[in-house]
Image (tube, rainbow, N blue to C red; front, side, top):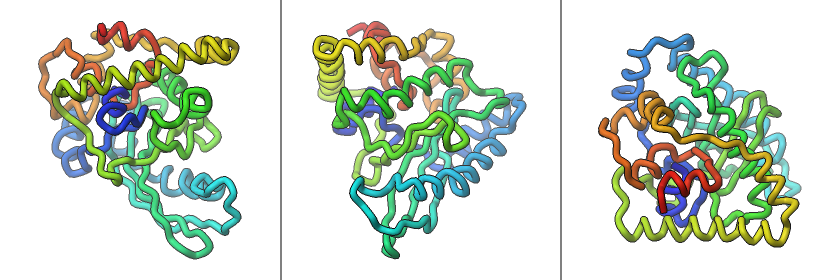
Length: 277
C-alpha cells in the first residue's frame, strides 16, 4: 500500500512501484494469470489501448498545457518522444512507467514518470470500488497537498478525473533517483520509519482541524470510505500482476497491509485500524 513507499522512499507519500516488474516478467507471470481468467476485455488489448492513449493523447496535451514547465517559464515547449511500458495491472488501476522527452526552446529534457489510469469500463477485472479510491487519490494530489504539504509526496505533474479523456494521475518516477520497491518483509528500522511518517501525516491533519476546521471538514466530507475487507484483498491478490509472483498464503502482518497496493489512498483511521497500531 501507499505507506510502504512513504517509509522506504524518504517519505514520498503516494508514489508507486519504484522497482517494479518489467514487461518481460509480466509476460511470463501476470499475463498468463489474466489470460486464464474469462474477461470481456482482453488484458493485452486494454493496455495496448492505454499505451496509445498515453503516447498520442495524454503526453502531447500535458506538454501543450505546460505541465512540465516551471511556473515562471516562458520557453517554447514541444513534445519530442516517449517510451512507455506496462508496470502494474490490477483491479483498481493500470500503472505505466514512462520516460518522456520534452524540448524547451529546442533543448531536450527527459522526465521519468509513473502514469496511473483507471481501468476502462467493460474491463471484467475492474474493481467496483476502483473509482471511489481513485477520487480519493485525485483529491489528495489536487487539493489536500496544499494543506498537508508536498514533502510527503512525489512530485505530481497531473491529477485529473476527466479533462484528458480518462481519469489520470501522473507522478514523478523516483526509481530514477535511486529508490527501490521492497517486495518483502520490512525490518524494524523501516517499520519505525513508517510509523513516524504516519504520525507526521496525522499530526498535520490534527493541526489542520484545529487551525482551519472548514477545510478539514471539506476533506472529511469528500473523502470516500474504502473498506479493506478480506474479500477485497483476496480479489486484489487474484488480479494483480505483482501479486501473481508473490506467495499465496495470507499474512496478518503490517507487511501484507503495506506492500500489496502501492497506489491505494485510504487517508485516515481506516488504515490505522487495519494495521492495529
